[in-house]
Picture (spheres, rainbow, N blue to C red):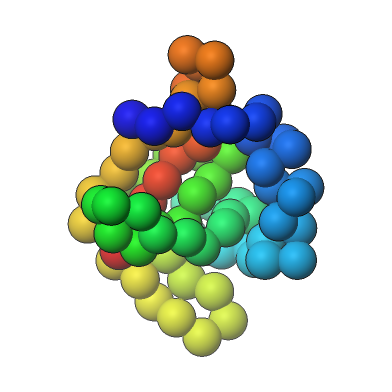
Length: 89
């Protein structure tokens, strides 16, 4: 768990040029569509989603060209409160 330096809405607004729409698929069924930001940290490459967002290991995240399988999940906080879900692929 990491601490965001700003509220998650500010974080997404600051990087709005990189925000993409992703579909979360579980067992070949689309369960949600969420905006996310692709990034990387010491644990790997991930897509960050604002909470609430239900992403689980094994889910497949798709956009217009990629199909990414989630291999790990973590939550970043802002001032100790869960704020962003990270789906590593």
